Image (cartoon, rainbow, N blue to C red):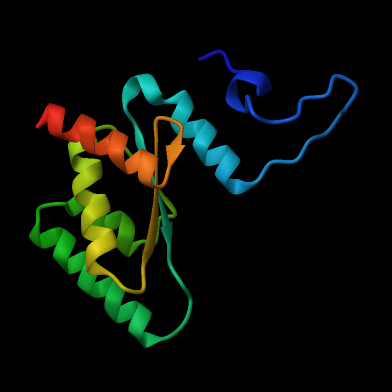
Amino acid sequence: MNASLETLFPDHNHAEDSIVTALNHQDIVVALSGALKTQNVAVLHMLYPRTDARTHRSLDVLVARLHSHGQHEVARLVEDEAHYLLFKDPVEARKAFQEIRNDSLAIGVHLYYHGLVGEAAEVALDAHAHRKA
């Protein structure tokens, strides 16, 4: 892969005379998912709040649910509180995203796919997952 600031961050201000620029987290993850578009890699950004025992119970329930659906690798990574999950298979990414989003009130997840985020990423992932399934 041959990347440049302009190709990774096309909407960002790239002044020739500037030696530094600022990016935020979402810029970086959107760029990563865009750079991996041809490989259909989905990125799930996991959000694990550090609050109380309810969070840990919710995490344990989610891990058990993922295991019960055969998503053992995902369950292990969630149990280890991995912050980013990269999926090479749109079908598996969609299953994990739905499971995490629907079955845990304490654990949050954001989807990035093909350089998209939010609902646009969901629509693109759903289209690829259904086509492959």
